[in-house]
Structure formats: structure tokens, C-alpha cells
Image (tube, rainbow, N blue to C red; front, side):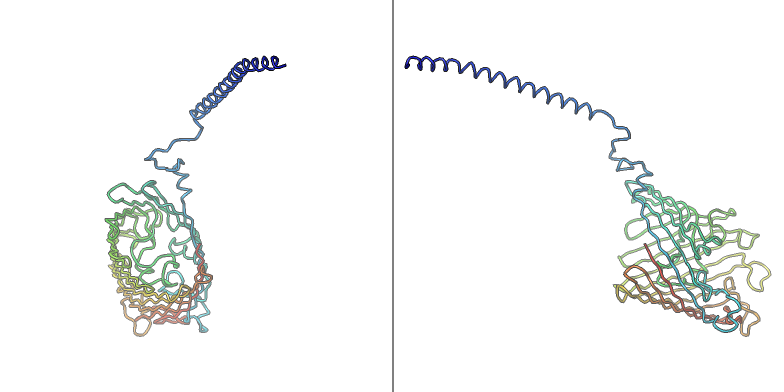
Length: 427
């Protein structure tokens, strides 16, 4: 028995290397198979990555479209949408008498809210804007509007295009901003949009002296963050030429601006040119010289607007031939933000219409002369925010003239007092 066990042990020891050799060989074969499979997967992946995917392109460092889209798609993606709804009501105390109900006479000092006892849909405006940048040097701006205000600055239809221009940021120095199309006026402190002004009603300077819009090309160069200059060429006065030029007269505009400190703004602007549409027979010359200074001190903002204006070829009262009609005026503004929800604003203004271009006196009235009017106006506007969103305004305004430039109960009057309400919903 002992011999048998010994022989079995010897045989087992002799067979062990054979079994180990067979297991090693099997593992080697399996490892080789796995290697071939992995190599095959790598080859397939490399082949797929080398194929071009339709519509996919690599974006270079200097590409105008950093996201790989077309310039049009990029502009649409980055377009900002905003706007507002502006409504109001105006009541003139000159029309409260029995004679005032016979007709709703326009207030000659106003250009927008000029009808007494009238509810207004002033404007519904939608703004689309994508301004140019260093990476995307072209941009655009559109302002589509409907309402009563449009009938004033468009001269007819209640739906129109307030602004529409294309922008090119030329790589010249710090950047030359070129804008071509219909743009807001360059002169003045106030805006067409009442929402951006301190008061509901517009000033005499805004309504009687300053342009509303200009159609042409405007170039702005910022020397640095504190100083800039603007030069432009356009069709001329907007009440003659709105979207295109009806004559060969053109206007040149320029502005020098400074903001030496964060809260101080000062601009010196001028517009000059010729128009055939004033007297209808000659190339009438005109100019507007404008100064604006504004300063903000914590919750208080004060501003001053000074204008000198002259137009040739005007048929004044009692004049047999066209003559030059100078106008001038100054408006002072102040607004105090009492709380986040309440603000109070005032405007004091003096306007001189020397030859009666805007305010012709009534020769039949006692004390009136053949010259134009000098008008003083005072406006007080109280502003409230509703739910931190809507803007509600209550306004009292007094206009006073040295001539009988107004109408009370269908009779000549030297002044007018009005009460106005306005609600604005920006978005």
C-alpha cells in the first residue's frame, strides 16, 4: 500500500507542469483575443471621427459668429425685446365753460396731449435691438409703434416705424459707431417716449423747436469714456421729409459730448441745412443750436436745455414776403426720488417766438401786437410706481403768454391750465 501511494504522488508531481502549461496557454489565447477586439473598436472610432458631419463646421478664432451659426442666426439669438404701453387723459380748464363744449380746440403749446377732455392711447411700442460688438461688428435697432403719438411724428398714420437703423462698428481706433436709417433726434433733453422723461407733457422746446427724428447716416467716435463726437448727414426737418427726401436739401448735424464724472453730462449740438418745403419757392436755410447739461446728486437730478433756432422763408402774421423766423428758449428740470415708489418732478420754461412762427397773436384782441409770443410754462408731475412695475403720473401744468395765444370758451386767452393723468406699463 505504501508503495502504491508513493507511486501516485510521483505521478501527480510529474503531471502538474503539464496542467499548468495547458492553463497558461489558454489564458494567452484569451488575452490575444481581447487585444484584437479592443484594436478593432479603436479603429472603428477613429474612422467615425474622421468623417464630416453635414452642417458642422469648425469655428476659427477670428470668426464673426463665435457660436458657429450664421450671422443672421446669431443676431436673432442675441436680439433684445422690450417695449411699453402708454395711456393717458388730459383736461383743460379753458374748456370747462359753456362755450368750451362747442368744440375741442387744440392747445397750440402742445404737440401730443393737446386736446382737452380726451382719453389717449399715446403709444404701444415694441423694440428689437442687437447692438454691434467687437466680435459681431454689425447690429440693428427697430422701434415699431402704434397710437396717437405716432400720428404726430409720422404726420398721419397711427401705426409707424419710430426708429429703424443698421449699425456697423468699424475697427478704427476705439471704434467708429456708424448708424444708417431713421433715428431719434440728436438735440434736446426730452424724448418722444414720455416714459423716459420727467414729465407727462413735453416742453415747448421739444414740440416747437426740436426735430423728432432724422433719416440719414450718423457716426459717433468715443475718444474715451468721458468724451465723444458725432457727425451726421440726413434728409432734414422731419415734418418735411420722414422716410425719404422730397427735395435736394440736406442737413448736417454734429455733437460734442462730455461726461467728465459719472453723474455729470454735457452736450453741445447743432443741426443746419436747407429745405424747399418751408416757403415752397426757395432753398430755405435753417439751424438749431442746442445745449444740454444734466447732473445727478443721489436722489436729485437737475437739468438744463437751451435752444436757439432760426428758419428762413417763413410767412409770419402780416408779412407779405417770407422772412427769417428766430426762436429761442430755455427749460430747467428737477426730479427728486423721494422713495423707490414715489418721485416728484418740476419743469420751468421760457420760450420766445419772435416773429410768430408757432404762436401767431390774435390782432383782434386788445393788447396784442403784430409780433410773436413769449410763453412761460410751469409743470408739476407726481410719479408713483404700482406693484414696482407700472408707472402712474398726475400732472398739473400752467401756460402763460404775453399774447392771446390760447382759447378759453371759444374766446382768445393768454394762458391755459391743464390736469393730466398717465399710466405706463413697460416690459
